[in-house]
Image (cartoon, rainbow, N blue to C red; front, side, top):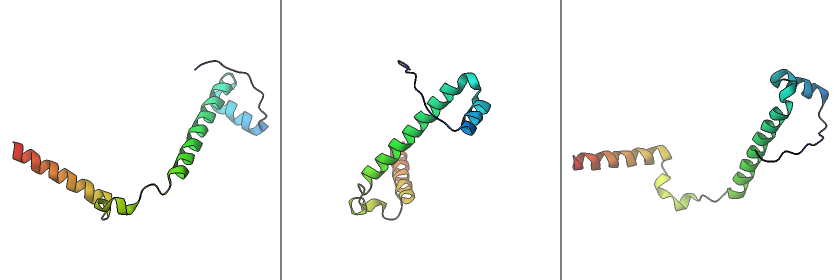
Length: 87
């Protein structure tokens, strides 16, 4: 996990009580660390979604015009046909 650093964070008392109830007082730091990591991953994901919005253009992928499911089904049918030809 790497080097640890002690920090002072002000948290509402009712939130601390809830954390302690769920995780236990001796595991408060672990619980908060996991929660913060999860939130950071979520925020990074949202940022990536915002940054890439509009990158996919429908005109660049006409094969998907009728839906991804139909396209995938077609690929699978082609694979089955090729397999039967080989066997």
